[in-house]
Image 1 (cartoon, rainbow, N blue to C red):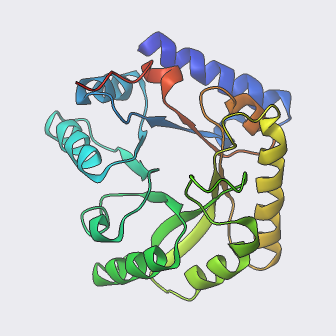
Image 2 (image 1 turned 60 degrees about the horizontal axis):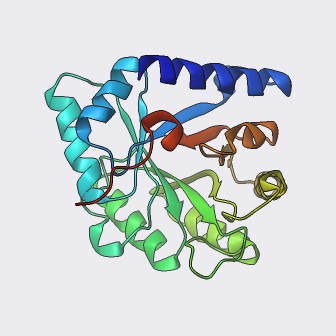
Length: 228
């Protein structure tokens, strides 16, 4: 794990330098969904501190495992489909919600964050490929959803997240579109500086288009274990 993590960091740094950016400007999020807590602990020992999960119970189990083993200072990102009835167990434990999309999720998240006197950072997930089976707001809805978030004192819009279509031959075109959307939000007065885009197969192309956060699962942990 240590060698794999170091190799990924070298690739990340090389991709950043190649486009005139500082490697520190890009954060690596280790997406460990489906992998056991021991794998997450190994990634922590290799230097990872940002972890992404897609299921609330899995996030809590792994966070508890790391905490009990003395591995502190983790930053947890929720990257899966958000369900209103499971938000309560996440608020207060998640540093960044990366997959906020529906209006009812925004309102529920705002209410729970207010209960805990938090100003919860979040990313709006954009469905760049306009794929009906995938979560995320359509690009035409972005302005309205950003305004909804801004209306809540307990929320803070920090940027955008997206996944290009799996069959995209030029994912960089989608990354460039998301970058332009972020710039549009900033011109409108939103402090949306985070661009979470790029995964194991395309993170270098995402960095070239301005990604500040890449979500790496398979490249770090290997294929997800088969369910039994």
